[in-house]
Image (cartoon, rainbow, N blue to C red; front, top):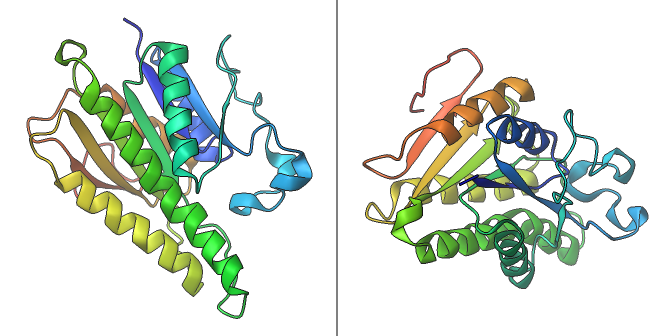
Length: 236
């Protein structure tokens, strides 16, 4: 049966490159696009990308029929649940997921508390809620289809965040990913945490492709680092 790879967020260049690699493997791609369906002006400035740069149909090979991006409101746990359910209904199931986290610009500490709270919710809770729903989905799958796989990619591209708020959000997600990758050894899924310090998204996407191809781990979960200088799986 054809596998389905969930990729988020689809407005992130590395996530889009991963989607291309997943299609090369013959996967269907469930792409989660933040704010998809909203007016472009309402999305301007989200995740550090101007709204004009977000085009859901601009993949190198183009999305396959039926792969219209799934709308997703990152800080909402209800939206995370809805997005995973939408993907599982549309494609029959979700077999694996790649969540890309990048630092992005952030306001400084002089910003209004509500603005700082929004940044932390958008960048931290978005990953937590999606991971929670995906692992619940993997746990509910029958054993005959094999273990699910979650790949958390911490894409600093060799340039860790320097501003305090951005560093706080990225650091929280990094710690969450590393702990999740080492937890639940008997769980019916694999969790991989990848620190991506490679500035070339195409190389990083090819590396993630190899993780998607890897056989199930006897000990689920691995924490890896990729710099673009090695072709092997290495622990940080």
